[in-house]
Length: 375
Image (cartoon, rainbow, N blue to C red):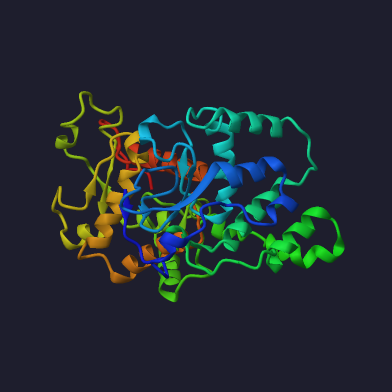
């Protein structure tokens, strides 16, 4: 779907934006295959209410967001187009991937691309060209997008910067081209550091304490110091700050029989299974059962469902008993992840949820056995 967004500086940009990725320096730097794709096959467009056609990309598209689509089947109904006909790159560094997906998946499969275009493409790919390391081509694609006025925002790509109309590459783009020609030259070291900055592993792992506000740092530190039932200190290095703080807000609770109403069979761990109960609601209503703020994932699949953390977050952000500082922290951590384009690593998330499920599934002692739940 399409949503409204305030990232566009000038409404006229929607009508006057470039419609191709190609720029004058392409012929000098890129091989004929990439030139052909960028100039003749792929169209640059901006999302409007009229052209809401869906496509690959993170999240919902906003009015004015930049997308890439096949020139030849753009007028065809969505369900009749071949895969990868359209995409919304979320960052300039993803443009190269979108073009490659078009090339690998869509180009030969699209029945609306004229045969002469496909014949020309096959002729181009059958020839040999000088080799340029892929990382330089990717960064060239990204910087070339800036040359035509694209800007990167937390909500995707938009046209909002003045394009380079000089006909010559900018200083940064020229530096990329020079380094690609001679990557090992010592005089290019500073330029390489500028173009390929060192990755901050803390940001990659969704750790934001070093750039977050004082309030957020204090909330995270408090969570690390306080004992929690389901989140352990050993979890902190491997999960995001957001997930660590979020699950710190929940206590164990026995699921009611009504939680089985939608299931045909009782879960294997029913007698020992714990649910999740907002600790702030529990403190405000001691001894009361089955109130708002209780959640009962009955198996690992339910725990891993993307709707659960959304529901937990929604409760915490709207619960009248949750301290404002905690709400501010979760909001800031989510915003920082969006601003830095950080996506939770799938393996780390899966590993944590598997551990969390073991702790929840075995929390209460089995019938006939004494003792306490896992600590």
